[in-house]
Length: 543
Image 1 (spheres, rainbow, N blue to C red):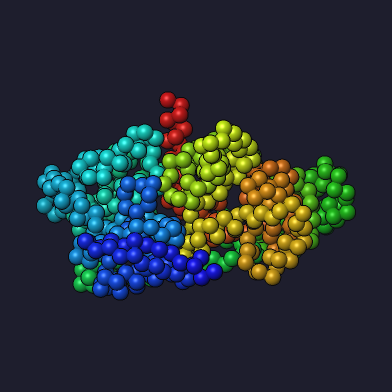
Image 2 (image 1 turned 180 degrees about the vertical axis):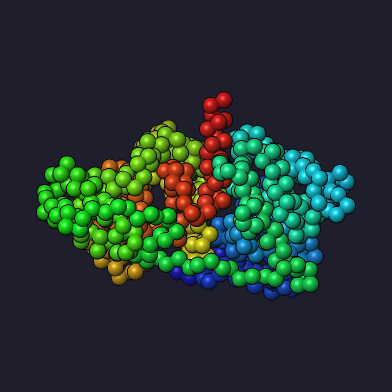
């Protein structure tokens, strides 16, 4: 049993190579660094670890704050140790984008070419920051251009490389503290060199630098990461602790940031009569129930939004929101008349195929594993002529949702749980024969998930029945996975509930780009990046 927790590495430092075995208990990276420091007589805090995977030619940098990198370590393998004289370890403020050490890239760009004297003025401000020229001169720039020219977009891993190269050049020209205008010019130069990497928002370069918030955008995040290793006397600004209001994970926590203007209400007595009719009418009196719910909509919406009742309290007054699918759909349509059918009409035709294409391009092990599992690549036997059955439409849709969660990770949640755990806040599957009541009892004891999520009954990769679980209640869903996700999203709005932290990025993507509902909160950069990639793939396919 103990051997199952052991991970073996072949570690190389300069001319020396040693076999190192660690346990998977606790922090894998910290255990490995401590063992390496002992074996090679180094300070563990002053080295950078890079791992070599068999299927890739390039080494992959390991960041202790990036859960995807830590997942790579669980596989063991060949690890290369950069000496402290050349590189410094960079802990990241944006855990998904600190893939290459800033000082490493500065050294690389410095050795590859001289500074173009036309690109800076006497005071160091930018005249012409030509990203295309910088990438073409860099030793690894060919990787970026080849991928972009082939697919009209780039993967997350390649975008990280692009960000690192550009930020290294910025540091060389502008120091570690470029001005706002300089960062804007660089961001503009990136989307000029690679037009499909622009955002769909009013500021097309805000994925790279957001002029409304200097801490947002890949350039600012990478520069913040690089500055963390500066000596204290070189820091121009004091380090600050991560701020922001903590978001409650309770399902009764309401979305106070959604704009709301109170609606004109009907008389309380009239509302009470309509409410009693809906309670006592047969579920099959659909037309009468829908008319009564529509007539009392204003009173109900004001109460839910302004008084913030719990889900059980709402369903006690309006039980048809739980047991009549048409009522919940109507409620959302009254809130957003133009957006109600967007998921049903566009996910499988527009989003799903391009998400699968992005998954096929990805170099992240988990996404590659999901793609192979969907198309049953791992079970193909060279000696067997049997061709695996192609995945069904519902399987493809399910995997596209899960892949989207991996492609748009929620940074707040990743500090608390892995991406694999995040999927469990979207969908939990149980085998056929599992009773909903037993699952609710199990969840009640675990006290893990509080925000709404899907319960799928049936095969793990293709459940046949779905329920939305929220506040110890199960709301049945009719139809396939796409219809279930459509209803899950709408439950958040109808009952005025926050998205779970663990899948916030995923739902932000669904909200802004599938349903087209804008909010007061900023759209995560990874969500905007994925939408830009989908748009680029669409354009490329229509050429």
